[in-house]
Every structure is written in C-alpha cells, then in structure tokens.
Image 1 (spheres, rainbow over the protein chains, first blue to last red):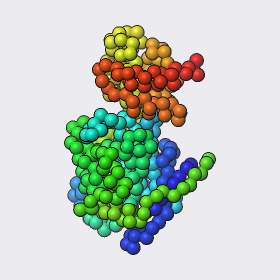
Image 2: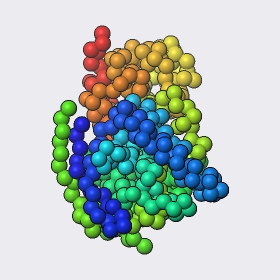
Image 3: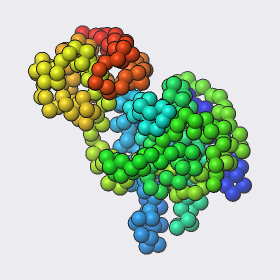
Image 4: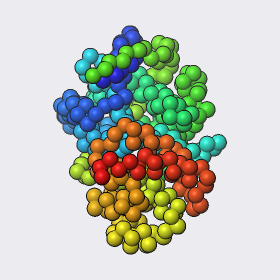
Length: 210
Length: 160
C-alpha cells in the first residue's frame, strides 16, 4: 500500500505528529475503520444519553457506518482516502471524480471532484457538551487539501463540490468554499463549491480565519 | 505490496492556520443526515453515472430513440430511462443486452455498471470519458471524440 508522510497537530501544545496519508483504501480497510470507530461512537452516545443532552446536539454523523459505504468503491470514479497515526485511522474521505459539474462561474459546467463522505474519528470530534477535545487537529484541513490535489491531478484545477452537514458548514466557509444553494434532493443540505481560485488561495494559506 | 513514502509539503504555520476553521465546528462531516439511506439500504448499489452518460451518448450517436434502443435490446423502456438518467441500477441482463446492441464488451460494461470489480485501466478511461462529455442535446465534436475513444476501450471483448 503506498502512502505519503504528513503531519497533524497534537493539542494542547500543537506538537507536530507524523502520520500517513493513504489514498487507495479498499473495502476491507473501511471495515477496519468501522471496527475501530464503532465502540467509540457507542461511548460518545452513552455520554450524551447520560447527560440527557437533546438529540439535536449529537454529532450528525454518529449513525454512519463506513463498512456500509464500501459499496461505493465499486464505482469506477470513487476513491477512499484515510489518515493513519500508528495503526489508528484518524479520518476518512470518499471522493468521486467527474460525476458532478461546477455550478459557479467561471468554470460552470466543468467537472470537479465531489466529496461524497468525509468524517473524523470519533476521538477527533470537538464535543464541549460532553467535555471532549479532539485528539489531533488538522485532519479535516489535510483531507480537503488532498481532495484539491486529487482535483488538480485530474485536470480539474482544484475544483471541489460537497453537501455539508449543518454542523460542518462553518468549516467549509472557513476553507474558502462558497455555499451555493440548498438541494432538495440531498436532504436540503447546503451545497458548497471550491472554485479554482479558492483552491489556490487555500493551498497558499490565504483563507481568512475570521 | 509496494511502499512509496515521500513527505507531503506544507508548513506547521499552514497547518495551524488551516486548523482554525476546524476549531469552529463540532465536526467537518459531509454526507447524509440520520435519515440517510446509506445505512438503511446497505445491500444496494448506487446507480452508475458514467454508464448512464455512455449509454446516452452511444444511443444518440446511433440516432436511436430511447424506445427503439429498448426494443432492439429487448429490455424494459422504463428501466432504460431510469438507467440513462442515473436513477436506477440496471440488472445484469439489461447490461448484457445493451452490450450486444452497442457492440461493446459485456464484461467491461458490467464493470462500468458497478456489477463487477472495476480494473484500474477501465477506471482511467471512464474518468477521461466523463470529464470530456456533458449531457447536451447534440453531440459536439469533442463529445464524439470522447465517445469514440471510450468505445475503443470498451469494445475489448476479452470475455468473448
């Protein structure tokens, strides 16, 4: 299995931690991801239940099962990418190439890389309601960076599209993506797009942090 | 298994700034809400958009209506419409019948439909085809070239 060495941040001192980025995950890998994450999802759910917190405040991806998403890898244009620290998966992303087209000018109608699913490991969620701080910072930004690189490699100039869960919208705005419209066909989720210009700014770190 | 290891290039400063966006949210998850059928229909396979585009362009290149293609392939018109609109997963029989009428390899078309494990070379050809073709009424010269190149790959009837 080929990989690239990347780095994440470990709070509270933001120490650099070496990790591996692998962009050729197989269905078997997704099963291993879920096998490791399911007990942690259960732990989080217990914490929420014990504290009597409103279900609407739960992480909106708590019900996901990556092993069930493995079927997407049968599609020709699908690719699964993950980040490993040691033998623990810290985040996973499923992308599809050229199945969706840009909605924003100046590249409206041109193909892009669509992020179908992306999620951090349960221990990397920021959950102040139950007193959990993320173990590693940077998993999301590095996966978005990887999606841009994938788009560039395929000649799509860094263009990305995705439908964000409501709890994640501020992240994608913070990455410099544009919230285009809500899609009735996609549970009324907000469709975000990264233009080629926004991708360049993101890679050069010119995105406003405000 | 081959290990290729090289360092990705971004600085600690880049990571620190980029991570600020992450700090503002519970998670950066993208996908479906709790009603997402992704965990309810685990046994199903998603419709194949590149297959849909290929069938649609191949049909138009032959000046066939959807109805006449369905008749020639002896398949249900409603299923064909669902497949060409990427709303419906075709049955193996339908894929086989379409491969006969469109004169391409049944094995390759099965892979394109997600009914068999795809090979890397077909995936690359499919990606190039998808990137160069768009769902317009008339076949542009570029679309026709993209279709012709893709057919060359698909027509490899190694299963015959």
